[in-house]
Amino acid sequence: MCLHQKPACVCKRNKAYIFHRDSVLPERVVINLYCPECRDRTNRDQSTMIEDVGWLIEYDMEVARFYLELKGVDHPVTPEFIFDEGYCTWYGMSPNDLEENARVHQELLPLQKKDKLLYFNELKRIRLAQFAELKKAGWRKAQNI
Ligand SMILES: [Zn+2]
Image (cartoon, rainbow, N blue to C red; front, side, top):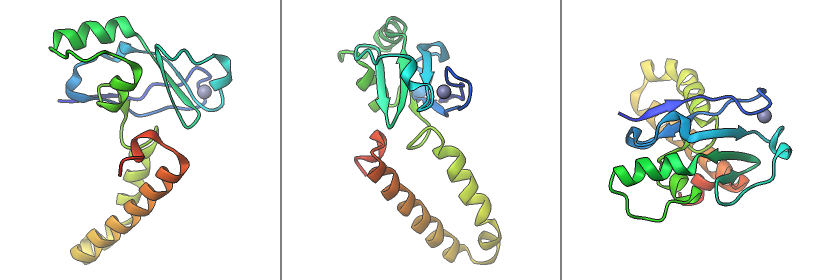
């Protein structure tokens, strides 16, 4: 089971879907989340934060190291490692990719009932176009697809 949560950012105007691979790290590993609107309330501390297209996640590095060591991970634990290895990262490609994905599925529901093959092709076409956009916008997880 993989834990996921949807915390609000510091200004409470936005939320992000956050995914925890294999539930290795608990929810409280996220100390603060800053959206592009409240991003300026803090300076990025490279030793505890990851930045992605205007969003900042601040991790509790002590908690992260404790649980990752417990899990037998012997890689230096950095915010990049936590994020890129999926231990605490966006659910999908960006903070709201999950919602976007759900919206596309909802939209295509009538088609799914009518023509399965067309549905899958259309789904693929839309998602690939979205991935290309996310990549262009600079989202970290979209860079390697
Ligand atoms: Zn905010």
